[in-house]
Length: 227
Image (tube, rainbow, N blue to C red):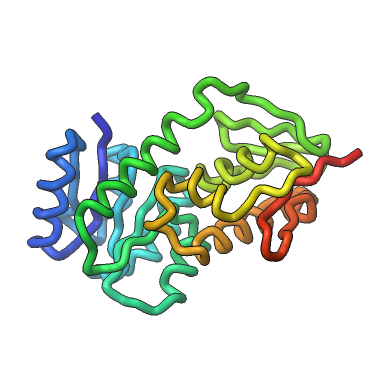
């Protein structure tokens, strides 16, 4: 049974989300004290976090930043605000998905299922290690290491990189990546993919590999292998 930490202060919405997720055999936990979110996170050890942006004490961005400093657990943001910068900020902080309120519960459940399936099942039959541009990619530990150092990626970032490395030096279309990432492209904005790839490229810059992921305008992305 997967454990989900739902960081939501609207009691009515919290109870409805919990009831819907419980019907799918997910164990849902909430927050009693919104000044102690990280303590609850440490106690629960969730497999996935759903977090609202507008919260008492500190906003969801604050808690996402703290969670990401300790864990790569998948995170889905909820928000009643419709400004596009909220989605961009969420992805830049390391969130895996974003759901706009009001939402249909079937959409939220589909996103939860797809994210859990992707994060905890992908690569089960694939080698854990791969060499790329004289760097070692560890799919199990979500790290990339070379002579310039080592970086740790989020599960979303590593999944994107893995898809690109499966067909190195070949352009992977945007629609193909979206469908692989979220299983159903109807629930994903094109901008979400752009933010995720840009974040991956920025992380790779830290070890000198950012330029190896290139954008092919109107086509998709390509991971280049050094000759």
